[in-house]
Length: 190
Image 1: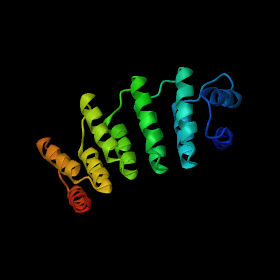
Image 2: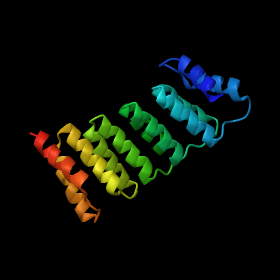
Image 3: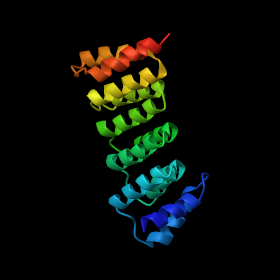
Image 4: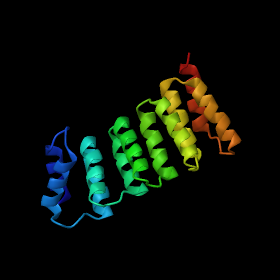
């Protein structure tokens, strides 16, 4: 059932509009709205088929139909973006969730940082850390390690070292993987 809906959404193309998504959902579900589990499955399927524009439009459409997104749905959508290395779509989703007043949690932000790391977008990864601090969301070992990894991929040694210092001052456990990524960033940096 969802595979058929996913194919219909994919067929809408890359320049899909929110109202096109709505019409497709209406044809599929009638007057009822999909539950969170169905939405999560659909987001995951769209991500698997690299249909991130449909994924973002689906979230917008559901919001217009009073289906409130939450941190779990945001995480599913971000994981789908990470799996197809679409950091731009991931940042778009993160911004939308903030504008929808969704209380994002550490897990959701960690996924966003990991999307940026996969895309070697260290500046954007570090920006997410700033956003987390502003939103008073706790950063953990995964948050910092992933940000160091983003710096390593981008050859940003100074950023990697700043994160290590911040980890130490926040009393977050430093592990071998984080140290290795920082050392590698220093080796790649100029």
